[in-house]
Structures are given as C-alpha cells and as structure tokens.
Length: 179
Image 1 (cartoon, one colour):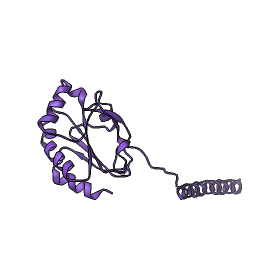
Image 2 (tube, one colour):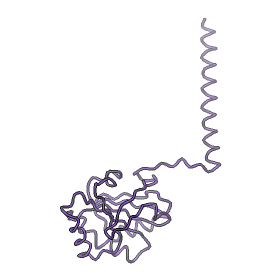
Image 3 (cartoon, helix red, strand yellow):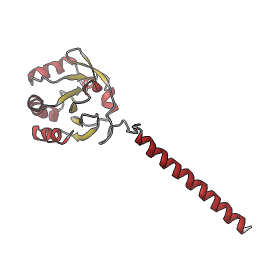
Image 4 (cartoon, helix red, strand yellow):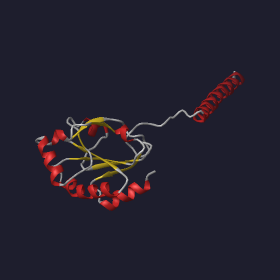
C-alpha cells in the first residue's frame, strides 16, 4: 500500500514537472517569434491605454496618433491651483523641447466649457487641450488628484507618473530619461 502511494506520488510529480517544463518552453518560443505579452495598463512599464477625445479646437485625437513621440499626458482643471501653477512651465517645456503635451481637462468638473477656453487664452497655451466631458479618460487612468501627469515614451510605455504639479526642470528631466 505504501509502495503504491509512493509510486503514485512520484508519477504525479513527474507529470506536474513535465507540464511546468512544457509551459516555460512554450513561453520562450513565443518570445522568440515576436509575439508580445506586454500589458496595457496605467502603471510604470505598462503600455498606456488608448483613448479618443475632442480638443478645444474641435479636432478628434487619439493617444495612439502620437505613437513614436514622447508624450506628457496631463490631467487638470481650471479650478485647481496647482494646475494653474504648472501650466506656464508646461508651455515653456512644450515650446523648447521635443515633446507632445496632451492636457486633458476634466470638463465634467468645470462649471462651463468657456472657463477652459478663457484659461487657455489667459495662459497662452499652444499645446492640445483635450476635453474629457464625462471624465471617462480620467477614470480609465484612475486619476484622483489633479494635476496628474503620465510621461509616455516613443513605444507607448508609461515611464513616469507624477501626482501633483511638475515644474519645467522636472518635465525636461523626465523627457530626457525617456527613449
């Protein structure tokens, strides 16, 4: 009886080992043929989720339209003092560096969309301002406090997440660290 249990346990162990060894081999083979196992997500190292929004100018843009470029994806609102503080730095970084800034306004939290237009004019912002009218994209990226910025590299991967305002030096440093 004990001998049969020992043989059975040994047999089960060999089968489990063969399955595990097979799974590891298949994963290596998958990587060799170029199949990607990269995850879409909102954490550092993830591929940023794609979305489409309308800009303040009325154009429809998708995040994936900018693949191949360094992106600062910034979530903000006009009523947010730290957002107001970082906008001049963002504008300077945009003008002086090779970066795309997509400033996603949490439009649902604004009393009226005209506030966003006035804000953009007052701060002389020239980068695209996207209107998240139902905060769906902010929810997709799990944005809680604003401002929150995602620095996305040329492959679409999130390289850095900043909760709170960034100054020009911080933005430039993160741009230079990305590929």
